[in-house]
Image (cartoon, rainbow, N blue to C red; front, side, top):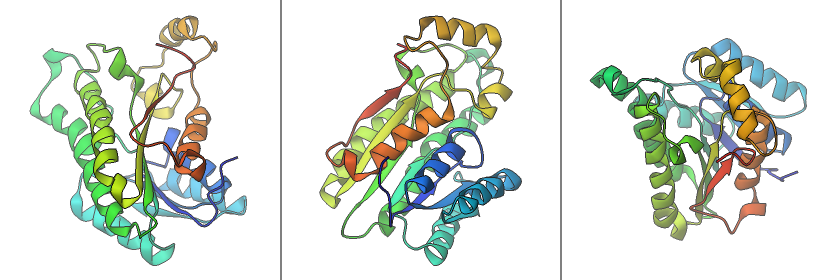
Length: 249
């Protein structure tokens, strides 16, 4: 297990799905964890209770990362309660689907304002808290950037942007001892994916047939990879896009 003892991690979009699993696993590895959420307070508080009942430290912090003022409030609360953040997991994201026919300025901004602009502004705020020893940033992208589908048009474009941002920030922030990597999940069984209609039995069955490891992904599968990248075990890795897909291409 990766050792994160003494670290303070902020996980955005951590009330459910991959984010919740990441928060719980980072805490299991020894980190104090800020569970950031936009609206699901009950789910966020449940994640915190699970962490605390297992002997960990965690707080729930509300804030929509598409709002710059909310980002400032999140980091201020984390610093005053747990201390300065030194691990940032950029997991929060919107998942508005649609083909070209359905694209509007509103649907475009729903995806891009959170998935790209929100990620950049959250990262900018985190870097101001990282000390002389640097820090770690792990972005949650998507494996679909290597296999585009029409119905994920603007969402997929945001995740392609995350790939680029990850590589560019790794170069920019490396001299400050800040590592930046991304995990690219394949189809993963989460509440959000189910609610979007993207995890029907027919779709999952087709994915499983093409996946060498013979199943769809689980949030825990992604959390394990994130924890590794956040730890000193990955100290020589930066600018990497790690596909967590069970071998699916």
